Image 1 (cartoon, rainbow, N blue to C red):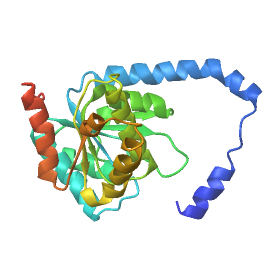
Image 2: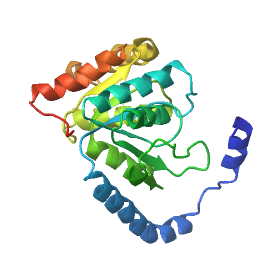
Image 3: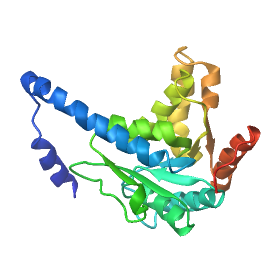
Length: 236
């Protein structure tokens, strides 16, 4: 779908009236419960997974596509499953790496009017589709043992800062968050340090919640070293 088609699609969606919002509330509760129960029951059986995030718009053959595939492959060989948003781009590459390595390839797909379709490298019994972003994000937070974050857009930033915030506020058990490609993330991190930190809106130690690396090997090492420090191992 090209940009013009996306714009036309968005124009079809009109704001709901307050009466419509209230009428849908009660029925939405049952759908939300269904997504949470389905997610819990499926993911609790899978075992330790590392979540890999990045742009859905990354093309096959792109440098970042290859990086995602390689890091997923290596992590799978170390015994971790791979969990992604289930769509194309970086998500597809990560699921592909896990699939090739013969490991667990999990996809948490989101139903959208454009851009997102489940990729073909997800294990059929490990594909879950969601209507709500917040139930999908709950599954990532609850069942991921680490985050690998590759170049992406708003959705990638959303997942990244959600995890950082929950760890910062002790609402989530500490786990490694690794950003790959220092040059891509440089502007954002400089702003965080020069503006957020300088203004006192974050603490110096908050910068230790995540790490930035340039190589696949370094990213895998961060995950491995974190768990070896606590004498924890993934399930083979």
